[in-house]
Amino acid sequence: MLAELQLHNFAIAADVTLRLGAGLNVVTGETGAGKSILVDALSLILGGRSAERVVRSGAEAAELQALFVDVQDPECLAAAEERGISLEDGALIVRRVVARDGKRRAWLNGRMATGADLRAVVGPLVDLSTQHQQNRLLDRRNHLAILDRAADTGAELAAYRTAYAALRAAQSERDALAQRLQQAAERRDYLRFCEAELDEAAIEAGETEALEAEVRRLRAAESLLQTAARAAEALTGDGGARDALSGLPRELERTRRDDAGLADFSGRIEDILALCDDLAADLERYAERVQLDPQRLGEAEARLSLILGLCRKYGGSEDALLQRQQAIAEELAAETTGERRLEELERGLPPLRRAAVQAADALSQARRAAADRLAAEVESVIAGLGMERARFFCRFAEVDAGAGEANSATDGLGPDGRDRVTFELQGNPGEPAQDLTQVASGGELSRVLLGLERAAARVGSAPTAIYDEIDAGLSGSTGIALGRFLAEIAAGQQLVVVSHLPQVAAAADHHLHVRKEVREDASEARTESAVDHLEVDGRVRELARMLGTADAASATALQHARALLEQQQRRQHA
Image (tube, rainbow, N blue to C red; front, side, top):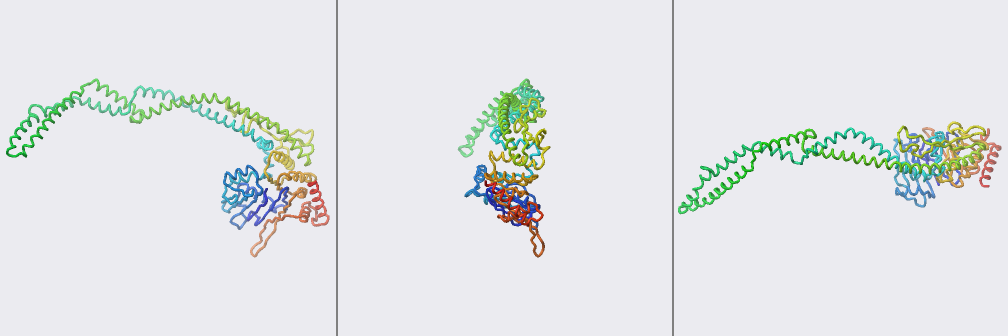
């Protein structure tokens, strides 16, 4: 329950506190006194957006604070727990500050919060019905959502949306994949040609470098043989290095008696002779391996030319070519995989379609069954509010087929099912029922909205409901009936009603009066809103004013007001 609302520097409310109780709370006051400011403040408490104009002139920021007590709503408690917000003793304090520069801050039980947090935690506690709600009735696109709320089709709607989302996801994937494959078809032949060309070439990593070395070797084979032969001849041929050195070891040995140091060089010369023999043998073996093979040279040159040509065609280097070959293979493989996936999706769509249709049928049946109950509920309410012979209808039609999409799996289905709903009203017997958006007056809309709200309340509603100008267009005996009706609802739900009808105000459990007063100081006069929590005498005076008598303070006016108050209170508690 909303127990208290404090406003500080909010529009013309410099410092206002509203204390609310259980049952029916009615807020009255003259036009311009600031009643709508209270509704604006509650909208902000619920996470609505604000404008700079809400800050009182001369102030840097506006501050709002609301106290909710005995909070038991499961949705609110779950949202608070999810955000780490503790509700000790079931109390929730909501504070919001709006600065003149547009910055906004909010707290939930002292914990910083966002607008989304306010909507999640505080939203389930308050149902705010304003003239905007009546305007929603004037847009038939809202009628289905209103029916669902009143019919409590949440479970069926959730089941359908899950099935519909699965169907839409599969169809979207199917359509995108089919389009991609169609575009790829033009490229497929080229890719397969490239793949065949590269597969036939069968190029191996490092082959280019190996071929270039082989070609250089084959082209220089004769020169290499000649060079190897000359080197071997210089080492071991006639007059070569071996011949020049062969007699030196013996000659050096003969010097040993004269100087052993010179004789020691003989061993080293013998090592050189052995190295000459080994080196000459290696050169001969190398020469044996060198091929004078023009045929192989031609083959190697042709192979190298092929590879270099493919490199230029597919990337400029052997590494780039091999990467391109891999990419082509993967793209063709992906296309094959895509074709298989497309087949899977095509096979999967009919079962998904059937599941969505079944869920849509169940949702539609629940709606149609609830529509009769809703119509009866609305007719019962509006009959008690002066429209005894009016009839209310929920007209069903099916959603349009797919918007030009051939073979669309979602044809005949929409995000909210297969139904379109239009509310119709037959104001008088013998006249045709017509679209509510075309024929209803403001007073009729108010009464129909009350009927819809009453139906919604029967299947679960917020602990507190705020009605702003719900009595627009009503008066007289209808106002008497409306006051009783609101008091009846308030027996199970806290109501806060901004009203201009004395009949409604007289039925209240708590009466708050909003007035303007001018405060003057040394520099200027300022207009402020003030709130009085009226007791019996104050209520009588306010009711007399609301009754519109020429002299609201006269004994007759006060007598009429007191009689109205006693009448409504007596009938309310009868």
